[in-house]
Image 1 (cartoon, rainbow, N blue to C red):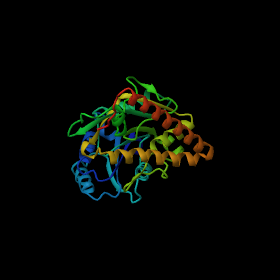
Image 2: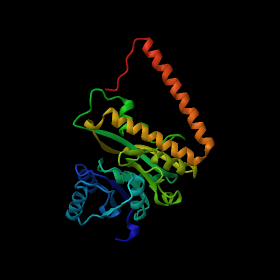
Image 3: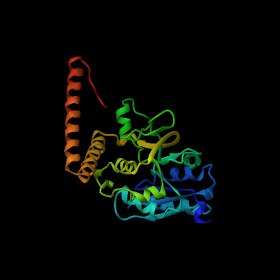
Image 4: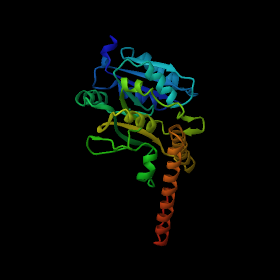
Length: 290
């Protein structure tokens, strides 16, 4: 097929997901969109388990699909996503996680959406947590939002100025990806035990700065694996602190004024949280995440 025949390129960066990456690939093989209209680029980011073998075996069993596999030695999702995007032939770039499962009409809906929304620069969709083995009784909206639960609107909507799609389910035009020079590698995501997050926020804030409109469509959905055994207080702290580190990097890149303003904003939120906590305590309420 010619390069022009590919409408959309799906980029999946993967790290130690041998147990789940096959389901992600299978969900893309089962798409309603013609198999010649899309490609899947899998970027292995130094996995130490059987991820590479699982991927190559699957690709070997499906030679009639446009699947590609490569390695990226620089650790971090931002590096891997940029590497995959550089090889993409489609006019649309879709970024999906290695433990996500797409609905059967996922890609077809994306292509149709951009076809009917000429002003769309970016697009995000619903992310439904798939708890393994089951959703814990203590799960709350606030905790689930930290592990990928995302449902911005019940209908198609434009993201408000400070809102944006999550990394597990985001789409952008390739020309716009190139215009903002992809993901900021100063915000790589997870590198070993260190997390420097916020790459998705930084990505879409820069896209919005170009005047692009970012949409949300709840019908463009994926399921995302959440291993309950990993949801320890230590893990959630790493997620939250990683967001903080990323925001610090992002604000410093914007200048000292933006950095100091963000510190003041966080101090205000901390004070408000303390006051609210004291109010609940005096009323005899208890709050527990677990």
